[in-house]
Amino acid sequence: MLNNKYFILIVACILVSCKTNHLTGEKRSHARNQIAIGSVGQEKDFILQKDFSNVAIPCFNNPIKLNVTTQSFTKQSFKAFTTAKAFQTAEVAVTYIDSLETKPKYLQIDIADKLAFIKALNSHCNIDVKSYLALNKHAVLITGISLALKQTDIHKITTANAVFLIENGLKDYALKLYKEDSETEILRFNNGIIFGYQTSHCCWQDNKKHRLHIVDLVSSFNDCPFKSYRSSYKAIKKTNPYKL
Image (cartoon, rainbow, N blue to C red; front, top):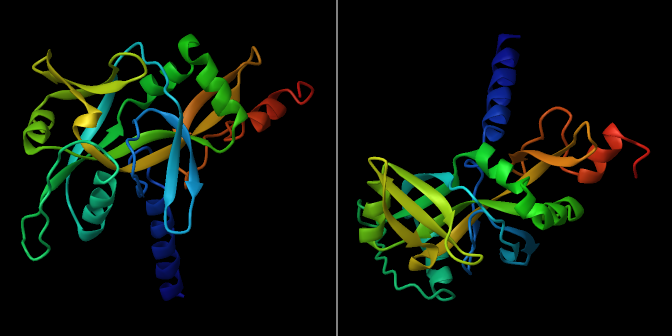
């Protein structure tokens, strides 16, 4: 009887650990072309890998805070980088030798301020983007990327006090770096090679005025919060069955 209790506890822990990923925990898909963090698109499954098609670039009137972590290359991530490098233009050299203990580094960048990101998606300037997300159930948002850069750029980013996602020109994003509350530099994503990405799905809710709102973002393995739904159609139907 005691062994059965331990078995149930172990299984429960495994299930919980698989569902603790908000915008950062899900395994990344491999990318070949430049994919903008914060952008909207659809994934297409091919025999050997997934491919992502960019559809829309939301506007951000205010910077969105990002979380940046340094990762060591593995055989798998280096292979993904090598494949992506053939399709992208940045001159980034990475020397990976599996037998050496010290491995080259890359950056894992994720949306940190999820509330600011959701507020921007619900704003008037993104009304068309929001409509596209509501009408296309397979549409997803890019909420994380794997980025290889020159070591000088990695040092600038990792030594900054804060890193934000900003609009940099027409339908283009960049990284804004801050040090001691002062802006230090703006780095464009095409300075590096994006070889991995993570997606999130919208959770919809129909408010009291019967207007659809995005209330949360979840990975493909997570459920939406109570009384919110991945399907905008379902969100409307639950609150106002006569509207559709």
